[in-house]
Amino acid sequence: MTDLTGRTALVTGASRGIGRAIAVGLARAGADVALSARDEARLAEVRTEVEALGRRALVLPADVTDAEQCVRLAAQAVEGLGQLDVLVNNAGGSSFLGPFTELRFRGWEKVMRLNVDSVVHLSQAVGRHMLERRTGSVINVASVAGLKGTPALAPYGASKAAVISLTRSLALEWGTSGVRVNALCPGWTRTDLNADLWRDEALAASLVATTGMKRWASPEEMVGPTVFLASDASSFVTGQALVVDGGELA
Image (cartoon, rainbow, N blue to C red; front, side, top):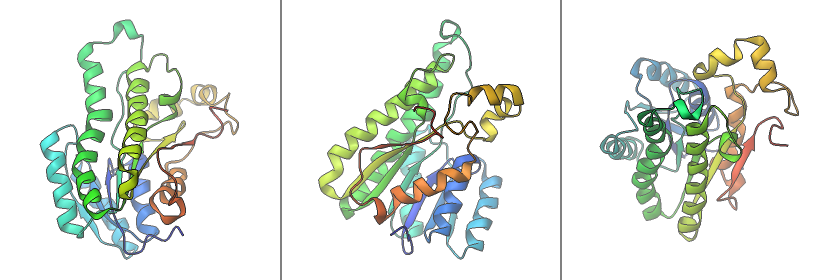
């Protein structure tokens, strides 16, 4: 039921971290994949991994904070792969860590453009295609930060809460058209973006001290849940925030 042979996917933020792992994981499950991020050289490396698995890969560099580039990206992916069955809105992040009163509003806007606006632009563009075909799975990579308070990370937490809310709204709007929309909510995961946190052993241990498994996830541990949401194994699952956090929220 998790076989994705014959299906196609577009993954944003596919050049590294969770996005890269997901892109390769979808290919391993049988899907052809369109890879998007700003770093074309890194995308080329991922393409090599995907093609080594016997799947097609398209490298489509884009800045997903730009609405016009998102529309073009969706069109290129559909043209290159013939159709899109899966959209993984993974691109995101935050460079702000500190007191809310010291946050510049332009910093808040930057996080929202990357984490929320990109999901809006691509979900609109790809959603139209999926609604016409009356089938598809949209997977928005959110975070457990969107389900709880996040001191010192207020813009990041708020942006991910917005993504989860949008996910639920689109699931209700598109459900009768055969298009499912779900959110993947990772906990603490070792990526390049948060390397300063997990490379400090004492800090890394303190951040996961209250989780059930008391360790950080690897990006590859997000692949199985994503393949589940992309495949027929989750054919009656929509509007959900699938938490993959080692017991953090518990």
